[in-house]
Length: 460
Picture 1 (tube, rainbow, N blue to C red):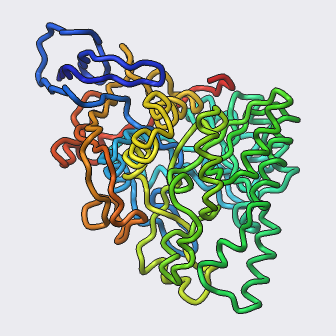
Picture 2 (cartoon, one colour):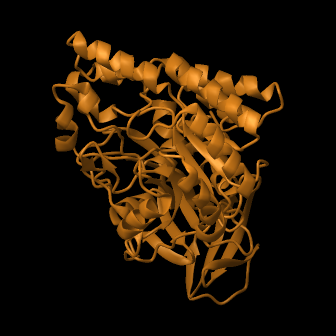
């Protein structure tokens, strides 16, 4: 079918103008003023913002963790994403130690295939780098279209690899044109502090935060940037939270190094005081934890300085009964936070509406940079002739209140309950089809496509 969006204020990472957009099939066919084209459907977007579909490159759907699974599966998670203006997500496959990368891919495909409503891709988390997994890297990049590989510097015995493995993986990934994502925290130091606090009978959610002080993230971020610099492998730090870690990246720029940095919406607007709410603080138990007000200021500045390129979510929701697994022991609280539906509206309301970032920067960090870094641009992440017709029509003035009573994520609480937001997603297109309109999802599961990605460029 064809569709004509008229009179919208089109925002990309570089542009801001009023025009019409004509889509046909899955792509944008024409952009211009007063287009005289016959279309199967016409949408008047006068007074609205029109920007590319959001890309959230950090989500965990239907993920096994601590004996349970994250509560959003591929259907509910991608549907909730669409309601919030995110048309594309990148999830993480987790290799089991002792098993191959391909066996993990098959397991994740078993949960995702034909179940997604929005588009998706995968990062491959390498937890056991050996001669066997080394031989699989080329196939993942060249045959599977999975070009990014996650590593953990924490969670020893389950996910963590050591520095020797990290160097070997970096050299192999660089050889074939991929990128390393890293969870950069000092796992040994964290494990020591967790054990220390538990031995002292300090078991509330506050001690989750106190077991991961800023130095654990700053040290690991600096170590990772050094290894990335030595190998020449492109590096991307996921969910960076604090001043010390960003200063490690800032220092790396002094030797002309490029390190990609992602933060998450919660680290920009929430702080560690929430952990003082006795067990209710479990709602915000995630790793790394929420930080201090001064870190929020650093991250907003980092976005404007170009040091932070992406705002994601690390969406990994657990229902309250799952969080209660850690009622008497903070180390047993499943780590994760629901935000896949809230990211775009919160970032607009707290960022653009409060003059912390420009509209162009908003699109850059929420849509365009993820597409560029992860090999999907210009198919995704922009509004241009030939790009996928992934489009959000957004009312910048409409006020509404976030609540678990009205959100579409499969979780029975909100990390932003009662939060008044300015700016509302009104209509969403995914590859030319109306996905969200009048607060209804118009697509069925199975419409979402796996998006193969190209090799990584260090230049964005």
